[in-house]
Image (cartoon, rainbow, N blue to C red; front, side):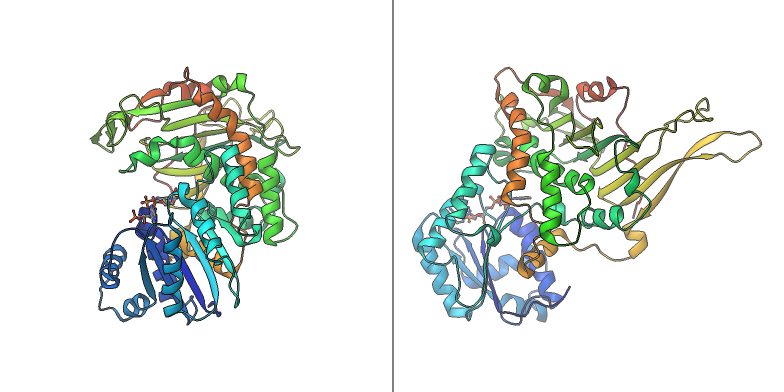
Length: 493
Ligand SMILES: NC(=O)c1ccc[n+]([C@@H]2O[C@H](COP(=O)([O-])OP(=O)(O)OC[C@H]3O[C@@H](n4cnc5c(N)ncnc54)[C@H](OP(=O)(O)O)[C@@H]3O)[C@@H](O)[C@H]2O)c1
């Protein structure tokens, strides 16, 4: 990473929110401490809460968990202004501009919308009303958090509204999973090694599995979660983007536009599940009370802010196909959700068994090689192989070879939000989905949402701490396959 030179102001809308506290402020401070931000750098923070400048500085010190006397922190805090105002009100943008003019010379501008998605359109309209969508001395960019709409129509409408104010190449849409080290590694792993790429197709791959499971529940974000559910929250964005990175065609270069084009191609090749098949190919669950890691937890409808009659799905499993020569006929199974047995995100490629294997009659617990890309936690790559067990008799056994980031590189992985902020400022668009990608994924998801919206569709109950309702097992078992149990013992730090 190299230092960014030109003067920069970040306008952080939603500066006191959950995401800002958990991810954005720590990432900004880390970039600052590593001297990766320009000498002339300012942040204008915006939210409605009433804070004086000093109170806001205290709030930030608590958020980032730093000693206020730390010299680096003191320098960082001196770059920050706070504007208290409602972004629905155009007056707030006059105040933002005044605060900015007081502290920053002319330079580049990054608007970061880390606020409620329902406010995005008002914010960009007010940016335009105040003529803040461009600056005379550099670029202006807009960084947006997901979700981008709640379905295909609203996503398209949002894009239309954004494009009234900004050009597409000014807009950076965040899917923070794409910035995870393990997902970025996919490019190098697949195309930088001669070993796997020629096996990466329907001739050699039996099927693919994605597990994106969390042990936590809705973590106090009930109002948000109940209006969203796991299909919109995780499947439509993170899972489809990760799959696109894993399974897309080889880009001809590292040019960001080329990589994005390949991801986009993949997404547009997803076979839209015909409505009449959704019931058989996708199953939905909602967690009930149960035990997670030995602790008793309440069911979804017992959580704060969740109506007793809620039918929001907290877990989903299903099977999809890709209409491409490379992946024809290869099922991709996915299972995702909250309050599941483990917290783990991984993609596993299960290879076909050797034809007429002379070992086919041998007892091997799980046949076939599996390559697992562990996205989080304990990031790494794990390959399952069959070997001869030591001894006088010929017995086969199963072993795993692993590459683990933490053991190999003995360094902290770059946090996704640092990478995203850094790339957005540098203008590297590789990891940012564009309007077309978002539309393509909504197109695939839309029939599933329509099915869910039907009054007849009720998620199936599952015990918190399990792997979801029995229907998740049946869905894969009827194809003669089974879910690969994630191995928490692999790549343990
Ligand atoms: N939290 C996460 O883990 C997470 C993960 C991925 C993506 N996201 C996305 O990130 C965005 C923010 O999520 P969040 O969880 O941080 O939400 P949040 O906790 O509700 O924070 C919203 C922020 O916006 C401010 N705000 C709300 N209404 C406002 C208004 N009318 N005028 C000015 N400021 C206003 C809030 O401060 P005041 O109430 O003081 O105004 C607060 O700073 C959402 O798009 C979300 O989907 C969040």
